[in-house]
Length: 111
Length: 121
Image 1 (cartoon, rainbow over the protein chains, first blue to last red):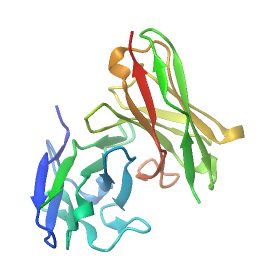
Image 2 (image 1 turned 180 degrees about the vertical axis):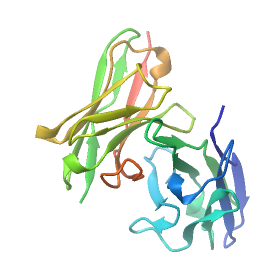
Image 3 (image 1 turned 135 degrees about the vertical axis):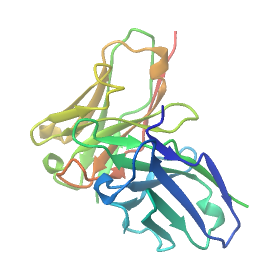
Image 4 (image 1 turned 180 degrees about the horizontal axis):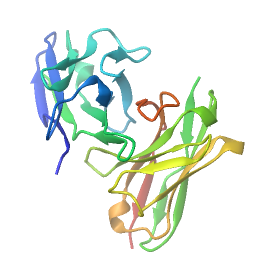
């Protein structure tokens, strides 16, 4: 049972805008879950994009942005480029006992 | 520059023990949490557990509690993940990740390159 939910796949046209979401099976994501986002390409470790909802990690281009959208966390990519084709993972802080839980990831295709 | 350098790939048999390492540099080892993250072949990321090297406070995801042990050696700024009895289902890439601050709610921000563990008879 997946506690943290993400779209399994998404596609976007080059130059387009896409919003990926990160939700809870039960309840709403708020800033208190400190949602964070990671990009992973095959054979590479994850790369940190966004932490604490909307803070961009050092060196991450400003076409990546984080927000809350309705009852979910969201990662928006504007002006999508071919090398944005990756897996994207969110992670949520679930409290001091469980600590952190990753979502199942979204495979983004740029075509 | 923050660096996390993990130990090399391992091939083990079921039932064997294993300890992999994550050597850190470029920051104060004792004031940031370090986590371990599993990625099974072709699958997503699983957060396993975390340690605060300053006082060895350790937390485990329920799925990994009792299955692995996380530890740290402050004297050499190194974190460890160990198994006492490996199973074939432990075959995966394992990443260490520094969390972004002394608070448990600081997200992972820097990553090791990964250690591939293969368990096969």
